[in-house]
Image (cartoon, rainbow, N blue to C red; front, side):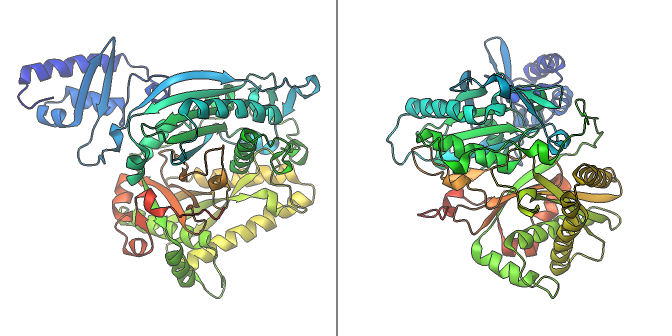
Length: 529
């Protein structure tokens, strides 16, 4: 849109946009993830409407580019103060199909009961994006796509519940409905995207919104193969949180890659379906989860990377008499928590109580331990608390360690005493009570993907160049995982706009980490995984 456009024409254009906005589906956000989206909105439709109806034409000109094409309107909202240029990446859906299991499910396996922890899991999808360079150039894009689809079909036969649909909220009807497979074309080259990976662009690489209700009623597995102009490939996969946690997701992805090599008999990726016997539902039904009214915030997501030498220095700084050898996850998590608390308190009139909920793999903590290939939701959360006086790194690491000890004592121990149902319900009640105190406390959530084998996933064209988790834009949520060398930590941190302004300027954080570095700079000649 040129500056010389007549003001009357702009007003007329604003009027037309207003009319289009009024006719948009209220669930426009779901359209962003659909096939061939005609609308891309990086802010709410309400904000766009207010801008179009306002009197500040110059502001309107700077922030909107409108292209009328065919019978639809395409709007790209550009905030000139915040855009990094990544929003210009176009992801065009080319095909969409359903991949069925390679063999039909036997009749006696047609019903799969969910466990208690499955029933209590949120209605959402777990996302993952694996990005591969085209350095080997052994296979064409079509050959890669065909290999992905054939091996996915084989993997679904082994993981037959994932090809079904949830029925009545308590079981899976294993009727071989299949998994959704989407193929897309990305308008840029992979190296350009990796210069400064953007959270909003990453969400275009997955085939469904993470908060979609389809996680309870639709496909349990969805895949999107995104082919870059250079031949690079980003595989975006989503799995319903109602049937799988990150460990189950990892087991499935490993089995899928093994099938691409014909290694379907590999015992390390054979699933165990016994979680419902360990955590029976006792006729508890949560087919219609209660809606929770949460406040809406404008949030910002930033990528924060900690390299190995700085993590070692951070661990030494965080050590104390109570925790003499903090893990790298404890040290990084405590620092992020500390800086997020400081940012929140800088924007608050009073000091606030703080709670951090962390993920933990229950398989390893049970007595006896459950195998890692036990399928279902067995990654749970425990809470750590900090008062207004406990904001030093050493004390926060101590609180993280104490929270885990309390979890083992109050929850895991009771599982061994045969009190799984009551212990689980009590744990979720405590966690829910903390969340509902939103007006009185700062509540943070940290999900840990460290030690996951994703950098070792090879479908036949080498290991991933980069692996990441597309985060949802939810306030006070952090996702952490290994860097490619297995020694550093990469975190996606989402805070309110006000808190992020302070967070990204925190001197202690800047001394220990880098914000949004070039992902190519983090790559090692050889992966340790």
